[in-house]
Image (tube, rainbow, N blue to C red; front, side):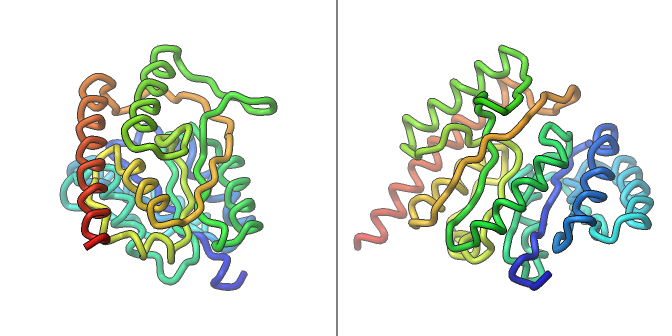
Length: 253
């Protein structure tokens, strides 16, 4: 596999030692077989005990899976987006930067399918983002109230920011490294709404974004607090809109 096909895949973790074992070993095994991938687990400052557990787990899996890099441990919690970006900074020249949620809600097979699709399309055709669209041939299993809140948030994002994306929050995205590096100075959101800011910056900069429907199933034990985190994400969206306007005004000067 040439350097042009290498995918640098980050798995952001915040207190995920109880769930990641059901997903990461299978993911690494399938990516070992696929080739041209690196997997970097980023532990987002969850405390000494949790980081010891994650270190032991990742070290054991590394012995079996060459694709798996040394665990990156952050000294303090900086948010999901911050963990992803810290991981992406260790890309070592990969052409594609990607992340996937640690809970396995998107299966290893689906991650591999998205990587194959990205490679077939090439980086000149832009980012690929997973989307929970219930369409023919796809299986999406999600509690109704979570689906409802998710759709309300997605509608707010669409109405406030006017980006042509159905599902900005699905937990797997692949972005050409050069596209990301072009917009990275604009990215300031480090919490759960970082996906929205990332997509806004890509769209505003003229980089293509394609949504790809995936199989998705809800995994118990999530850390998202629906009401509290939804409010914070909404405030982030308002801040992103303000910064977007300021950026556009700066370009016109």
